[in-house]
Image (cartoon, rainbow, N blue to C red; front, side):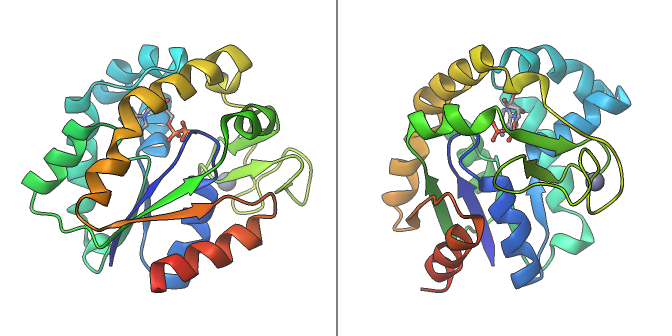
Length: 210
Ligand code: ADP
Ligand code: ZN
């Protein structure tokens, strides 16, 4: 099963991808996490991506497509995967088709913009493994420490309010057109994001299985 999770920044794609991948036993592949890792390690892709990410702009298609292509060629992705944060442009969706990847379903997690900006200030991410948290909706067991790997949990530089507004604008301009792209292929399902993470998970799993 090859799935795409689509949604505005902070809609909960990453969190739901972490839940659903365990349920379906397939990896969740987050281009955002891979790019942050590349930046941390100072790889060529990371160096190319950093300035765009800090501003809240999209990283150029060719950089992201290269990273994604290598990742889905790995062994653990043979039986399927969840793409979290890719594709983010129509050009990326077309590149996926050119790679010969068949997508079974595209799950859009819909959250209104007003709710997004309110949520983002509480969002945290693990510096070690990339797991996502929220001080209110998904707190760590020990404050500031990742449940999964014990590394420090921090706020992302691009989660500042000004950057969030610009990322939302980019989402509506560049990524939201993918809804029509996949709806035309009969692959789009929309889930209303709930405040309670487990409620959204139920709806998401039902949408995938239905
Ligand atoms: P969110 O979903 O909260 O916006 P991500 O972790 O998915 O966060 O992405 C963080 C940043 O990484 C984006 O703002 C963008 O700069 C870059 N990025 C991630 N995925 C892509 C992609 N598919 N295409 C271009 N840029 C990307
Ligand atoms: Zn961690």
